[in-house]
Length: 149
Image (tube, rainbow, N blue to C red):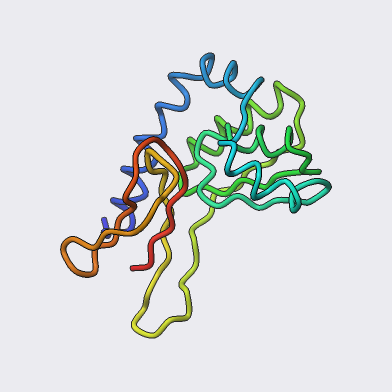
């Protein structure tokens, strides 16, 4: 099995949490909101928009985007398990969210650089580099983080 296949299998295994916690996540989806700063930044852009959400995971933020006025959300995730669980919740709550298994593409930056995305525990307040080349978000709480590798 290649490193890529191992990574996908590990991510998919970790995503079984979205299945085990389905009832709790369904309750969260019913009232989900983004952080106030996220809502402030996105409020002028989201109403009526078809939103694409890379690394959507459990899909809870997608429900918040619909509540903010998005016409639809296409959630993309690396894990077939996460995609299936998020799609089940969207169907049950009858929201215009759909989900697909996908990888973030190469950036086009020389050297085979890729962009990866993860969920941190806070909105990122700045980047720390430790060791050099291993950027990570400096913050606490949760929030999206993009990293160039």
